[in-house]
Length: 76
Image 1 (tube, rainbow, N blue to C red):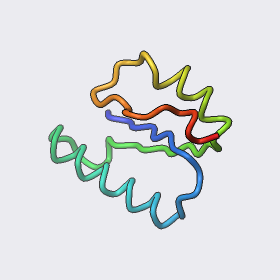
Image 2 (tube, rainbow, N blue to C red):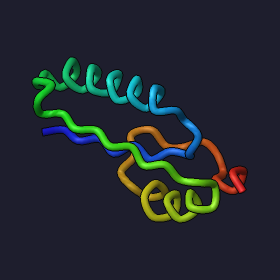
Image 3 (cartoon, one colour):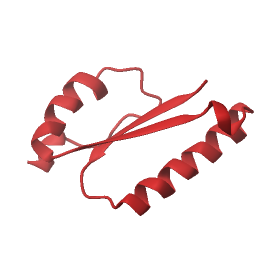
């Protein structure tokens, strides 16, 4: 049962979030060969200041398959 939690900087519309969730769901079901019913996706929005903690706690040093190529301080 795959679950994706997307953490991102605030500012995207509900339509963009729904489109992202649909694209991720499609990618998961096609890549993993699972049914839609098993997929769940959540999206958390953060402002630039909050992102500093998210970056340190949840992104930096985690088991990433694609690492970020930016300094989060650019968001302050």
